[in-house]
Length: 234
Image (cartoon, rainbow, N blue to C red):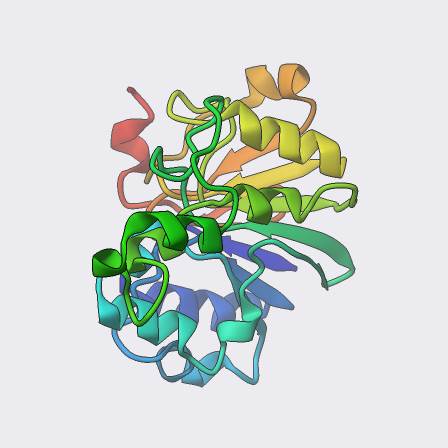
């Protein structure tokens, strides 16, 4: 069993409780972790009970602490961004972060293909720790997106939503189809909308997991998101 966990924004008790209750083989956090301490410390009680994986979200670069507690943690190598990993017998592809127009806002053309290109253009006064501005360390660069090209997977996890969400992106649809995945899971929007009518159009099952929500691989909610009921009427 794999559990997909919506944006926790610094709250992890419900995830720890779910691991103790359901004993999943793995959990995948869908971004915006904002861990208050290094992630391995926050999740210390379940490190020996499940495999922990994640993708980063836009808020994981809001502050130095948000960044360091994730990207500088002992679990930093569990970031699925831009790669495919076999988890509990399934090939899971990941694309963390968000599209930002300064870098790339599809379907528009990109302004920088790589972080190095952006750094060369942005001016040294905007550098952070000698390189890419912290904010853009959670921006999706084309090089990250196309790193998954020509590969196949079973599941795609993203922070951004596919086009089934009104704020989603056709670029996510295209990535999912190119990977030939059967399911996608996303966070970011803090809602849990019914996408089933769009599945045939996009060619895959799409699932959103709300703020602090938890879903299994079949889209069954083991914990409803904080705002799911309220936002389902939007």
